Length: 193
Image (tube, rainbow, N blue to C red; front, top):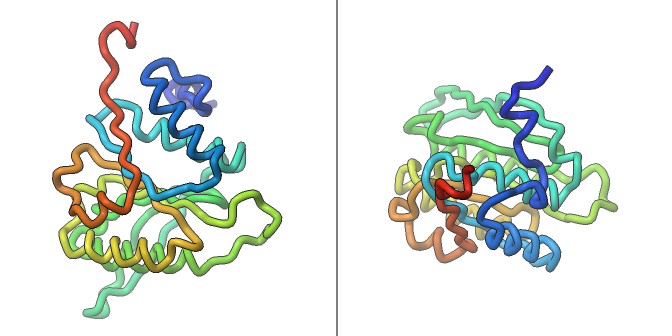
């Protein structure tokens, strides 16, 4: 038995009921095939993660809905071991690196490197890249954001990154310039009812 909010959460762009122009833009990008890095931002509760799930469904079909939780162990330069939990499918991984605290830079670099170097089992798939969804990117330290920028450039051929945040003002300009930014505004009262 699933939770009510999970059962009725939109899974495709056709099930969305507000801000349809952003949904149409995302659908057009998926249909075009030239998939860039994304920076999706807006206030809490505006539907950013829901649109990301719809985007993943358009890219990979129902396979993106089969989620599993994984724990990744990483080692810091001071030989301390840390752990970060990710949610993902065979096609994507979602991570909140702020859960790692001051080691967010290491988590970002190691996770993206690991995922980018992992080859797809089925090479006949329509997409030749995996997607990494990074939540709360605006809470990353500046050095972690600089490391993310370098890593985004290095692994562009094998993975695409979707960044999700509340405000772009705390995201460094170098990252903002490498992403297609899409603002998801909070729904109006009329759109809710």
